[in-house]
Amino acid sequence: MAESSFVDVKGVSVVYSRAGSVLDRLVGKPPQTFTALRNISFQLAPGDHVTLYGHPGSGKTTLLQLLTGLITPTSGRVTVNGTRRLASNLHAAAGYISSEEPERHPDTVHDVLYTFGTTHSIPHLVEKLTDVLTIAGLDPVAHRPALTLSKTERLRLNMARAALSDAPLILLDDVADELGPKIFRNLLQRLFPHRTAIVATRSAAVAEELGLPLLLLHANALAQRGTRDDIAASLRVRRVVEAWVEGVRYDMLRRLKTHPGVVSVQLLPTTRFAGQHLRITLRSSEYLPSLYDLLSQASLIEVTEIPPSLQEIVERL
Image (tube, rainbow, N blue to C red; front, top):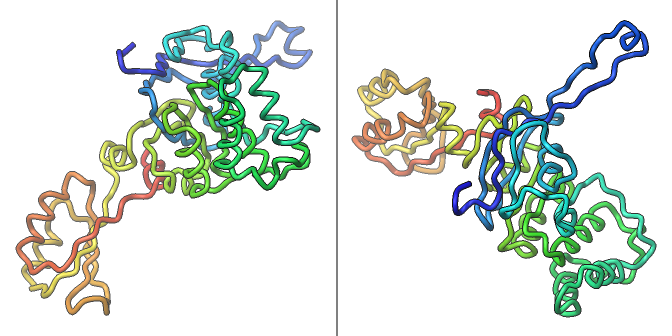
């Protein structure tokens, strides 16, 4: 494991067996197998915040449960904070927050958190509890029974409980989808500023708005990781550049259209500037430098790059 890595997942696969029908068992037909994760490897440094994106059924929840020790890999290894005995860590489960987890506590929100803090011997509990209730936006409901909370209030409570805990790894399963990326990003930054966090989402729009580095699951494997721009460049996804030019000569348009990296050039109407508005589609980001060299020969007013969407990236997989 690299010296700076806090989470180290190496060659992990998870395979489940499905029992067949009674007839299948009678004739000796072996059970069917289903691969939930296939040869997953990645590392995270202490304090990293990343988004785990994938379609439903891609293995996001299975990966998060591996990291808490709730399930064990069929092959490969998972190390968190230098240990592979994840299930023995009493605080690990508190770091896992699922949008599907119900809240059954009849106690008040304040009492739920206070009881958790005393059970886990959290130091300076009263001060921490006061801060966490405020940051999580739970002050207005602090004395309501937890089982009466709305879904978003329940998720705030679970995030507050994780913030009180000593869990160094925070795993959030579809929580951003429910709270909305803007509210969620604020809670993530304020409640867990120095902890490693993995935010799982099935929404491309949420993943884009969070703006975190990506772990991209596809077909139960880790297809790509990195920033959206890094992944787009790796997959050679088309790039769009919009340029406002003071005056476009015919020879400039001809050179743009015959540029080896240019797919299309559109001349768009504009009232923003006194000039021409060009939309140029490139085969990939590797052609950006030569395009800018060509555009610099004209009287440029402004150039804007339109990054590819996550959906466009996924379509290239």
